Length: 415
Image (tube, rainbow, N blue to C red):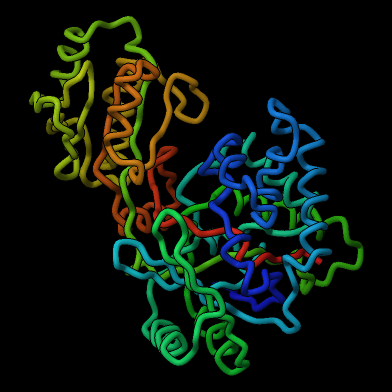
């Protein structure tokens, strides 16, 4: 059963919330972070992307970067840009995109739930990225950014959240420069907190939607700290980590697409001929083509879009992994035709979140940076949950959730 724990959140003053809040560390590179934080000393990017305060070209995994994160975090606390709540609370974090709002309960998840698979995963983590986040959690002794969880919706939780939002003004309420709205409430009422904790304890499993590396790092550091503490009791704050829990019926997954740097020695005509063995191919033309349904792909190559529909026999609708379009793409195209064996390590392939639009795929190919692009039909929430429940793992870079959680609205310290 899922643990939801209230905690003394470290939060910005109301007047600074919008300035402190930033996009997550893993959705922008160092140069983008440097530009985004320019002229804003309050941005959490100074902590979660601390290389922006060091000379350009600094090794992102150098000790200097992690020490800068610690130094900047201490500065934020000393300056009062992040202040601890006096009591342990739960919080509500809502996001609005395209007129739709989703409401998440913010609290701490349990390290034990991660280790015992109450918190279920659907993706493998990359060791280099996992180690980076482990070092960051160690050096700051905090979960600077929440992880994004989902759970099968519970009517009473939905009602508690809806009633609370209706009857209380948000503590923070702003629209970020990307047009997405962010709304945040502090739940101070102990009866409401206790009831939410009790209701979550009846949920058999919660699921990592976004933030597998942050989740793994938070749990592993917590486990390290308990092993190092001879007087460990299980109640210490390091036994928990920061998460936002959204009901599954409020979420949707958008496409996560692939671009490849070269044709692996093939020419266009040869590639099309080989693709025809496994796909029904239709040339669409220069106008952007979006996949129409499951097992339909779009490909952009040499100024033209193509519709690729997987033929019967190239997938198994009864197998939760084999039925995925990312699996079909890997088995029928990336591996045999492009010799891309490991999506997590091959430098010839890159991944583009659907929020950037299919025009981004076209731009990357037209620029010459990439040779070909493939767009996929989005995975469903039911597919994600079914795969996680089965103990199976999705191929890397299968799901993209939007809007992303803003970092910095609340931080969880481990001591």
